[in-house]
Image (cartoon, rainbow, N blue to C red; front, side):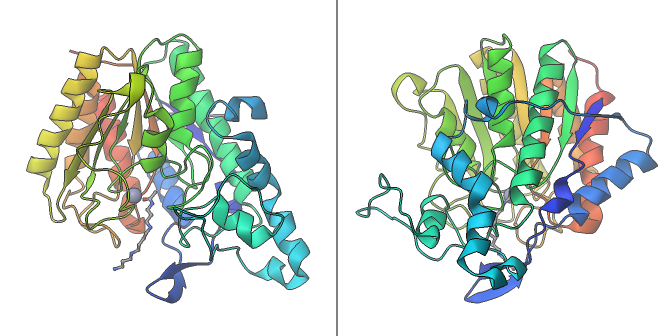
Amino acid sequence: MHIFYNHQHALHQGKVEMFRGELVPCFEVPARVDHVLAELQRRRFGTLQAPQTFDDAVLARIHSPRYLDFLQHAWDEWVALDAANAARDALPSVWPVRTLRSDVLPANFAARLGLFSMDAGSPLTSGTWAAARAGADCALSAASHVAAGARSAFVLTRPPGHHAGADFFGGYCFLNNAALAAQQLRDQGAARVAVLDLDYHHGNGTQAIFYERADVFFASIHGDPHTEYPFYLGYADERGAGSGLGFNRNLPLPRGTDFAVWRQALAAALQDIQAFGAQALVVSLGLDTFAGDPISGFKLASNDYLRVGEDLARAGLPTVLVFEGGYAVAEVGVNAVNVLQGFMQTSKP
Ligand code: SP5
Ligand code: ZN
């Protein structure tokens, strides 16, 4: 399996996120990806592949021009406000909810930071754009590799992507790597693409991006948004809209769900993807379903991830796997590579 590794991931290194009225150390840290890379090397699994570089116009297939423009220049504007800002991350503190206007682009930087974000848990840092931009190149390269005939590819990157919408960041995500990969597969000839989101948290960004489209099916298994982040999307009654009606499937599960029950949801999602007639699959591979995850509530064990990989392989589709969440840092490498190993040791049906 070719691994598209983001060599620039550590340029994004948030210091703190807002949690219960306090700034606490970030859960989404560079060591996450370092552990996956170390485990790949320890098992001699896969071959690292240098990504191609893609034009910004490719990003604009998914993200709005004004959001991309904001993200690219945000750090410089933050430091321009006050030179002392160079030593601290930018976190939003005001948002245009409901009756407030989001059509006007304010001149004030804090106002734009809020306009283009969904939470105060996703610090924007000096290297955020460079890291996220290089990660997008990895996702696009992996999709191109699979579109050209490879069975599979793994995108090893951070920051993650699935909470990022067409025009906002949040949930530690800035550019939606899975959505970019799915669009690239479409643009390179796959008529129907499925995105299967296995992160503990609902992939609100990916769902919203494809919600009114019939050419990209989105399925997600995640903690029930009644109690779990991102709270405001991910319910079972969200089935798509307009021509996308029937092309969205959410499978929320309660905190505490174990692998036996989770695996039945996986079977249901894969069945939907088969019925849809997907020609390619993008997996948002969050490993925060692990029992030891510090911010999540499912109960998967390390060995279960071998079975996850096997189940994914039996779908028999050209597959791009994209690294998303997973915050049990010491175990995330073993868990991620278990999925990849399970996938590779299983032949198509
Ligand atoms: C990609 C991804 O997995 N994003 C997840 C974003 C979750 N942000 C909210 C985190 C809330 C932290 N709760 C801490 C609980 C400590 N017991
Ligand atoms: Zn997550």
